[in-house]
Image 1: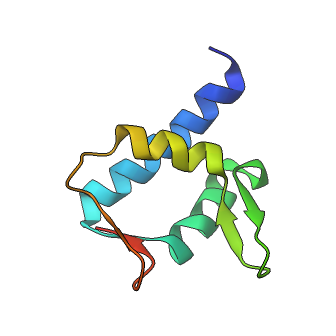
Image 2: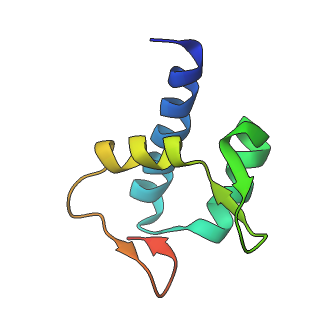
Image 3: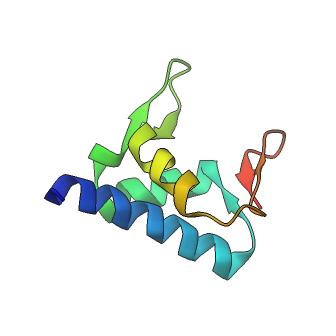
Length: 79
């Protein structure tokens, strides 16, 4: 496993920990925490100019999160 993949997993695990601790994880909050705590390489500006979480992080997060955790499109959060 490369160092880069380990870092993406570390970010995804951080997201999962925050979600299980708080019961909800708002995308518009966690994206700034990720950028600050882990670095700009884990976020990007999407087509609307908003800061978003890198797809690699989200792919790992989807694999490690329990099935009962769902994405709420309207609220833009995982719960």
